[in-house]
Length: 220
Image 1: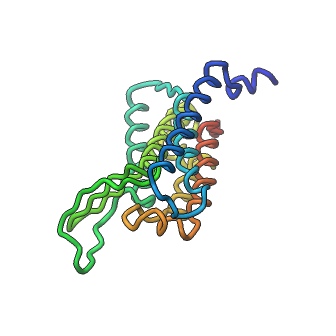
Image 2 (image 1 turned 90 degrees about the vertical axis):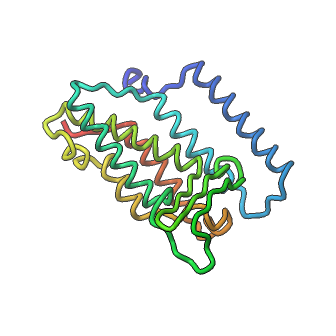
């Protein structure tokens, strides 16, 4: 039993780094409150970005993909890149431009939103729009990395490649969940983005998805 759970037992170094990170995040929040007049909503929306970032970084740190050969590595990279583009699109990081009366032809600015939500990079022109929220960028990159690791695991089983990606719940769930829970970017501001409560669902989906992909119960 102890061997089975050894992978999940935190070391003393991990606990130390966790304390450092949590204290730094608390300091960032206190500094933000001290230098702004934040009145945009409930406190939990300020905590969600840290949940995304912390869970993402921890999962990536604890995951060590091993490629059996160059072909498996290339397949994994290709699928992970496609997956990132998929969740990035439906998650609001980028997409086609929204033509609105009075909108400038091209705009690039930094939105100084609360820590984790910002600083957000916002860009749009006549063709595309980009809304880079730090916590979503980190989260989606982490999911893509975990999908890459899952592809490498699946390559060693009877069901390999892309078929292996869709053969387990831990792999297909994040794609379906991203389509169902995808929300708009930050262009309309923090209050409007979270007003529907969609980030409550999205945060739960993200944490469960990372946990499943980190566990990676593939079919052997």
